[in-house]
Image (tube, one colour):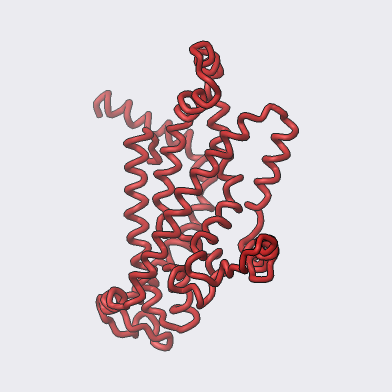
Length: 308
């Protein structure tokens, strides 16, 4: 064995010896992920079968791409795709914009106790489940809820926010932002603390006011973080929020509120169309995988951040 090969072998052995405790530490998590995430993938086979629970995976007849062709021939399927993308993209855009604005405003506060109190208040909704939040807003936004009682003082007729196709999407996005923007702002607040304060002093000497300092110094300083989080969010472009929609939608707003996940829930669990629901889930998984790969590529290209 040559000298370079011996050195390389010793280096590999040393690296393994150093990292072995770390591999042992993550082994239970790897086992759980394999059991609950990878083994169930075998169930995707029913997307290509006319699945009968009594016959199982092996006995059910194979039908090829029948269910995928059936999906694309359904008149409502393209509307479901549109709803999913519209709601998901709106959540991604405003879910990034609002935390950035909030972090910038909170960063200007100099009273530490007041700043911490505000942070605590806006973080709290993130720890509430969608069962609680959804039930709460169903009552608040009903025709006799507190919102309609308030706007009624100005002579405005009651608005059925969660039963009107014209207002349902915007209501869903607004409630999602209310719940999550405080928690999402944590990363931006951390990024703001890493900005060199001497840059603000230099900008002030050059005559820049607070708005100009925010635009040229603050936003420039957190721009890599904004790019990173925005591109990583592309991987969730097909996740429009199943739990929220399930708690807050109803048949009256299926035209604008029915998404892929709720369609899978209804067709698979309520209507027992297992193969159809599995076909939708398989299609979503493939598209989601493509979007995740694309988002990691964009992150590596524009933010110089690599996961692998």
